[in-house]
Length: 224
Image 1 (cartoon, rainbow, N blue to C red):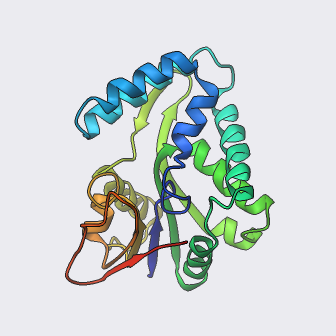
Image 2 (image 1 turned 180 degrees about the vertical axis):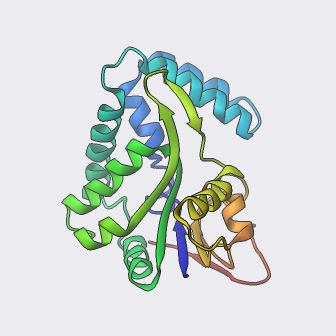
């Protein structure tokens, strides 16, 4: 069974256009959200500190009715804007579509909310950048939230990404095997487990990952 995994933010979008941050900026109280982000930026980049930021934003979302629906709609709207401004690279979508047709399983793995990832793919479909068949083949593994409690069920970041993937294989009755290829932009932290375990890794070039290298199964690309 051939499997390819794609990160979303910075991989299928141009670096610097993080859909989670953009969505939270639009939905959360701007001053309170900025305070949380500044506190996070002042700390070391760890899973625990990022989790604290996520929990903080969930508390800000408590005042919003139907948060999950609004996250989906906002992420979709924002993605449409990114597409219109050429911030969803055409070469990235070509790679995604080629993988969909070449693979038995194609996964989008993101630290963003599941609802935001669904909004992203819905925007691609609406703009006819992927077909209905291609849309239906996409499996989304993302951060899952209990919206009744505004609590995190699974924060799909860092080392958790590869475990979420293996858990999905087990649940679906697929053979548990390493991914054949992973497309990532943050091989040091957010996507490290995918970059380390995939037979091949494609790193989307940015200023923060230029020193990354591995001896086998490595490719560096620039979508622009």
